[in-house]
Amino acid sequence: MDSALAVYGRYIDAFPGDDQGLMVRFRRAQLYEGQGRWEEGRAELRSLVTLNPTHELAFQASERIVDHHLRAGEKDLARIEAQRAVENYDHMLSTVQDSETLMRIRQVKARMLLAVGDWRGAYAALTDLWGRYGKLDLGVSAGFSAAEVAERELNDKTRARQLYEELAARGPRPADQERARRELQRLRQEEGRG
Image (cartoon, rainbow, N blue to C red):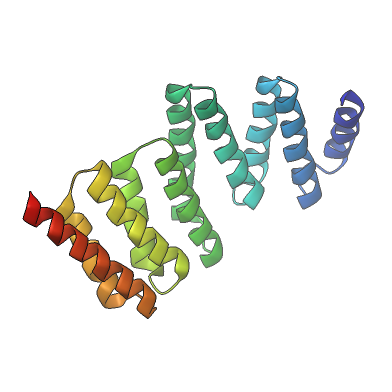
């Protein structure tokens, strides 16, 4: 392991910011984490995010940091790390121009907020995805997830019903529309019993 870490270190020194260098940095972080050297692994992940914040590996690195803390039962640290990442994402959303990158930022922001149980933030991020990308699978999936968060976590059946109505009317595929109608019917039945 130590020899692999040394080789990775030499490669990173030679090519710090290119795609291969970022991949090597990510792999080295995994090795550190696997050896129980989390502080060093986290430092590698943070460096990766700093070097190229819109790279797919940077998104994975931020999620990995939060996931590590969640797996360790460190919910407060996970929330702090998630908040740091979300603040960076919000900044990038105001500065990045590439539409594909903007879509990825919005997706990872929603996943991050869901992971730490920030239900209001997750709901807002998911409804944003649905509103912007409702013709794509990711937008439809976000719409259904937002409705579930509204119903189960925010205890707001009105918002859930509104989203299911939108999905039933605007879902791009008949299967999506039918699923939304079934969810609406379920909500009506539950309200009738309540």
